[in-house]
Every structure is written in C-alpha cells, then in structure tokens.
Length: 103
Image (cartoon, rainbow, N blue to C red):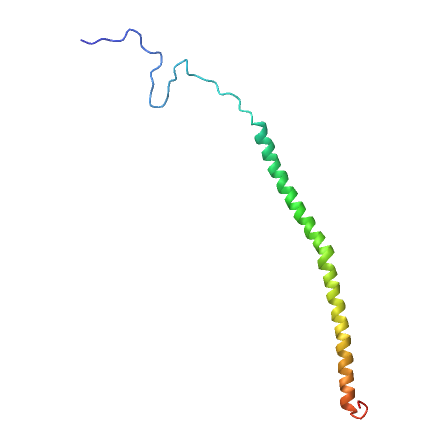
C-alpha cells in the first residue's frame, strides 16, 4: 500500500539548485564600510607619506648641516697639510744641500 502526500512541494531540489524556504529568503543588505575602518585606512596612507617626507627632509638637513661642512673642512685641512708638507720638504732639502747654513 502506497500513500502519496496530499500536497507536493512547488519546487523539488535538484543537484544544481538549492531551494530556500520562503521564511529564510533574504535580500542582501548594502554593505557600508565602517567609518573608523575608512579613517584608519586613510591614516595608514597618510602616515606612510609623512614618514617618507620626514626622512627626505631629515636627510637634506643632515647633508646641509653636517656633510657639506665636513667636506669643506676636509678640503681645507688637506690644503693646509699639503702646504705644511711642502714647506717641511723644502726646508729638509735646503738643509741637505747646504749643511753649514742649518747650524
């Protein structure tokens, strides 16, 4: 004896389709990004830009205040040292050439 159901469902599920009961069907809500998430995302980009600019400005300041004056000082010391060495060599050569004048 076979009994058939009185009311058959309107849709029968197949392997390619999932039937949701009418009470569970939802319409997807529009997703708005969270205000704080957007602020944090923008601030991350701003912070990277600030750090890059700060590094560039710091490098330029160090170059202006330290590196350039040190290079100028190095050049002046080298010139002065060359002058002193030339004078010492000249005096040493004179004293060797004329031993009587050195006494």
